[in-house]
Amino acid sequence: MTAMKKLSPARVRFAPSPTGRTHLGSGRTALYNYLLARQTGGQFILRIEDTDQKRYVPGAEEELMDSLRWLGLEWDEGPDIGGPYGPYRQTERREIYQQYARQLVESGHAYYCFCAAAADAAPRARRPHKHRDICPDREIPLAEADARRAAGEPHVVRFKMPSEGTITVTDALRGDITVENANLDDTILVKSDGLPVYHLAVVIDDHLMKITHVFRTSEWLPTFPLHGHIYNALGWEQPVWVHPSIFLKPSGKGKMSKREAAELTQDGLSIFITDLRDFGYLPEAVINWIALMGWGYDDHSDFFTLEELIEKFSIEKLNPSPAAINFSKLDHFNGLHIRRLDVADLAGRLRPFFERAGYVVDDEEKLRQVAAALQVRLVTLAEAPEKAGFFFRDDISPEPESLIGKNMTAAESLTMARRIYDLLAGLPDFSEERASQPLRDLAAELGLKAGHVFGFLRNALTAQKVSPPIFETMTIIGRPTVMKRLEHAIAVLEKLVAEEL
Image 1 (cartoon, rainbow, N blue to C red):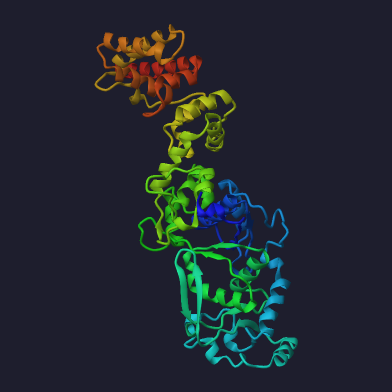
Image 2: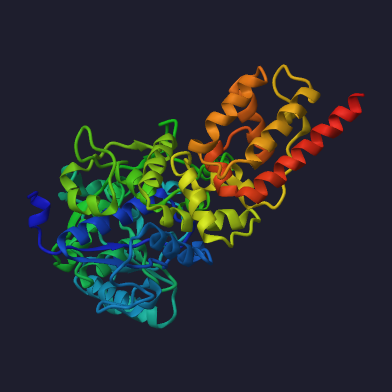
């Protein structure tokens, strides 16, 4: 039994900001949280960090929840289902943050800042000095600050960063990280609109919600010491901090940008969870894929179900090195997970893709047969309509030229087509056992290769160059439709022959 399995029940949270679409990085963070919670018999909490109202995107929260549910990552507490530590949206917790911000001010760890440099939008890069070096408000008496606040003077709350000494914070993947306080600044904790910034709200929420482990990508390492300072100032025990690697774009050079993400989508690829769903990827495959972008069980295992990941996951085996997004790997895992599905399950997952393509799928048994025929041939579910839409059409229209065999004339192909029709009309069924040898014997009798006969059948019955095995295809299509499509192909050839005369 691993060390991780001996842990007490973990309380973990996935706390995204509804400021855009839900991408792979968010999905992986949620997954690692979920795995630890389920492995230890703990709780997985969804919290919406929506204090940045300027960047709030309508619909982002709904997409986020849809993405998590599709991935199978159900939460135990959250804004939609409640829980003992709510509210679970930060904009609904304003009074809580004000209480602790005031506590920090009264204890001398923060101060009300009224100076012009306190403007929320002032970019840090434009200020030549640290704020603490130029702000006149760091040392004003609390009574004076309260009077100015009461008079309506705009202000923010800033953390009063020590100018000397160091702070050491500990990351589970990287060990102790020590930073000189002189390199840190007086960060805004509460904005002029009264809402907290992430750095204050996240610390308060994690403490009050009894979070034991915090997973967040290595992008947060620069502000990690600030969070350590806030915890210390409030006298609270810190959670276990885990900063997994960031994702790199497929080239392995740099982070994915919005422009590059848009270009990927045009190529049928995406870093967004709901796009991957619509592109025909299975949630099982996406889970398998993102789990391995930063974690590994051993040197030879790479296929995992969610249940297996819950059993095998451990923080110790996370890799802090950046991971490039490899879509070929996703295709590989998707194919493997499609093969693993029960045929009835696969049929149900294929249905919306056929219907979205305009096909009426009202025959459950036919759909199940099609799913069985496609199961070893699909990379994504979205390929199904192109590969097998002909099963659900009343009529098909093969290109006339496709009905003429290689090195054959239209007249010779017509003779072959008529003989094939007569042969099949006399067979009791179209199974490979019944039909294969007679068709091969016919080809030999006509001085043709078997490929001529089977190629004609494929084009006449599917209007495609590639399809599931022809005997399986004929069985699924059924005798009436097979004979009807052969009659149509013969009529097309007859027209071609007549035009040549």
